[in-house]
Length: 381
Image (cartoon, rainbow, N blue to C red):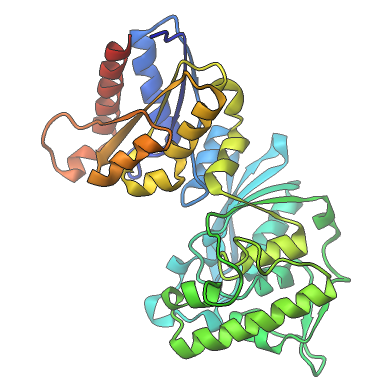
């Protein structure tokens, strides 16, 4: 087959190689075998953990370390990615209000807040960012964005005229909303939310019922929070006015999907689709002869919209003749599902028995990846 133009977009091999490092290793193998080929390397992420690092590295931005209000309303170390030339901020909400930031014994969504996420947005705006990509997976919260919106300037009042709090349990007290002191810069901002959850805001498939228990909610708390969020959404939709509670993804991250859409005009976009749009890979795929993708572990979940399957499907949609090959650290039996979702063939990169620790050493991973890509190219050419 013709191999004049090869596109490489490999997700990270977690614990071994970053997305770009894996891509560059594959590029070295390609150019050694096909020195005349045009080879383009793109970072690959799916909106989940690691998206900030991947997009910032690929777009030549910087990581900005900072401190914000954590999910338990105490200071936590946090960060966001900044790409100055594009005015772009890349944020993972888990860096401000993630479940891993709450000790197991203290997990209770009545007492967690997204306030720190609002602080990250404010800091990014102060740095000149007006375009936001925000991954909202891994949250410890169920506050429907109450904390984040409070940080951005909205006022939420109780029936007695006093301010409501910033945690999930305070939603039940909200009787009025005042947006007169909201940061004016928000009007200049675009919010694209990496959201792979399709749950509505409340009800049997809502955020409280489906995700509340894993955040520490008892059956009683789940019931009370679902009712509180329902009342809060009704109030919001009357006062703004806006409709959003039943939009797929409204229930993501304890109602953050709803908050971004109704208060900030945010777009809820599948994570892989959003990341592929951001890296601008479409142009390259339209003329590619071969796409090389992959990730550390390939399994049935890969076929459900993760990065390698997402870029494979996009490649075939744009250019039916392109071949898509994936490399991976390991492949589970159900990895064969990816052959129905954009990946023509996949190849685990291990070449001899070794421990997991040995296999994940950076030098070993790089060598194995290059060796596998070389053999794939020999077959194809």
